[in-house]
Length: 299
Ligand SMILES: C[S@@+](CC[C@H](N)C(=O)[O-])C[C@H]1O[C@@H](n2cnc3c(N)ncnc32)[C@H](O)[C@@H]1O
Image (cartoon, rainbow, N blue to C red; front, side, top):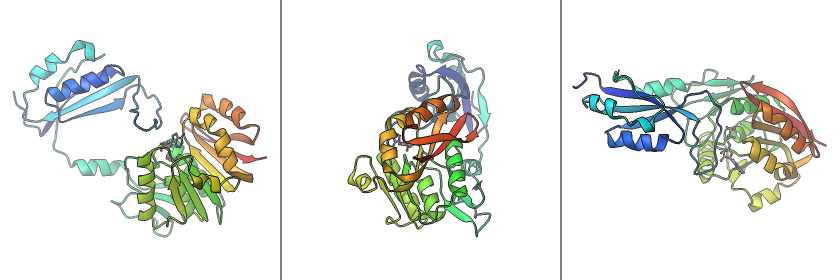
C-alpha cells in the first residue's frame, strides 16, 4: 500500500530504557527521523556535556517517506520495545517545515525593555533593547521558564557599569542581555565547549565585543581575576550543581554583590537557600510553572 501524502508517521510510547533500541529499530525499518517528546510533562533541564536527556515516559514519532508501504512496519513493531504500540499510520501533508519551525520562535518580551528576537522576523519595537538570537545547540533561547525569569530580573535591575558573571552561560543569552542592558563587563563560564562557541557567535551577532563579554571554561585564570569583584552573579543550572558550586559562585561576588539562581524546582529551594546561607541570604524572587528564581545579596 502506498500513500498519497508526502510523509507518514507512526506514533507510540516507550520507557526511557526502551527508546534507544526502538529508535534503531525504526531506522532499520526505513524511518527518516525519530522524534522524542515528553509524555508525562516531566520537567527537564540541561544535562552535562555528552549526556542525552530523557524523560521516564517518552512519546516517539517515527517519520517515513509517503511512498513506503508502512503496514508491515506497523504490525511488526516489537512489543518489548514499546509501552504502547502504534495503532495507525498517520499521513502528513507536505508542509513548509521551515515555516512551522520558525513560527515556534517569535520575538519575546522580557520585562520592560528587553526583547529576544529571532532573525526571521523584524524586532517589533526597533528602539527597545533587542537581543538577536536564533535557537541553536546550546541551551538558552528564552523560551524556558528559568531563562525567562533570569532575563526579566536582569531587565528590572540597574546594571549600569556593573560587572557580571554568567555562570553556565549556554547560548550566552543572559550575559549578552546584561551587556545590552548596560553592564560594563560580563564573564561567561560554561563546562561545555559547545556553549563557549555558541556564546561567542551570539555575542558577535549582537555586536558585543569580547572585551565586554568573554567566555571561558571553569577553572581558568580568567576566573581568578574576577575573584571578589562581581556586582552580580547569575547562574541558571540544576539544583545539584548550584549547591556544589556555592564556594565558586560566592567567591566571585563583591561584598554586597547580588546573586540570582535559577534551574531549581520549588521543592529544591529550601536546600539551596540553606547551602548559601553562610554567605548570601536568598529569597524567592519569582516563580514560573514549577521553576523558582532565588535572589540575594552577599552579607
Ligand atoms: C540551563 S543551561 C542555562 C543556559 C543559559 N544561561 C540560560 O539561562 O538559558 C545550563 C548551562 O550550564 C552549564 N553547566 C552545567 N553544569 C556546569 C558546571 N558545573 N560548570 C559550568 N557550567 C555548567 C551547561 O553546560 C549549560 O550550558
